[in-house]
Length: 395
Image 1 (spheres, rainbow, N blue to C red):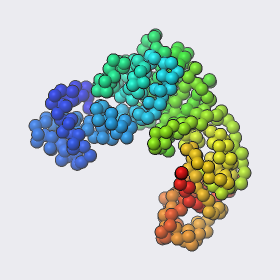
Image 2 (image 1 turned 135 degrees about the vertical axis):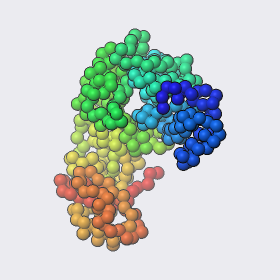
Image 3 (image 1 turned 120 degrees about the vertical axis):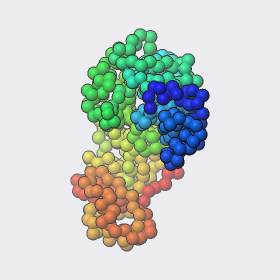
């Protein structure tokens, strides 16, 4: 995809090709291309239309029905904020009184679009001409052009006069590869963390694996998961900071659950209880396991392993719960015998603090029964341990 192809998709012929490609998306690409060309669509336009139709199909999981009107690049879609996360962030900004926002590094516009939908006027920029053009096209396609303007510009040169807040999502990929050194981000990390000194209300989207030592003093660090998948972290600066650490868990139905704390409290350590809780990755990454354990009256069985044990099954959005049937020192022979006696033929394998390879263990167990079980490879008081149990159904 290039600027000329994007422009071609906005012509009457391009719109016709897109409509035809939409009906062919998801099928055999060669057959689809042949069908479009047979209908008179030039090969280059057919390829662009089919690419967009396929990306729109894939984007539905992130953007819902709006994806059918949007424009994407593969990299732009992969890096875009999920709509449910962007909408929640926009609502929080609006509730804080933000009415004019600069979006530095807007990508295809996911966060800028959400902010505009919330009634915030957005000035967005991206350094890549095609990406900026797609963000502008998405604003127009969704009827948000009056609130959202997009320019192709270097984020470090943007005049921030007149904005209430800044949102920055520095590029963390180059040449298709992830960048792990913040100094190599675009714009660079020094510029990003300096934004809060220029515009107090600054939000920075970062990778969920960010080193806690990089969180600026006074900022709120938030980790966000969607349906159990850890998707991002965000740093809220200035008076936008409401906590030190926050775990935001968005469930499959879209409900938002939040746990806050200092991120420095150690959970109590005790015996293995009747139930094991496997905390959501947002809880673990935000270092809020102790705060979670308090909500279920639980404890760790090893100070360095983030499994929580309790004597009761308490409904919680922050963890999966497994009812424990057996706890034994790890021994392949003993485990194989136990599972054979229980007629177990299907297992899910969870692990923390174990060097064992789950797939190799699955093969070595030589399961032959029909019953399911959950296996948790872990440590208890420093000793390699396997916990056997069954998931507790939420309800």
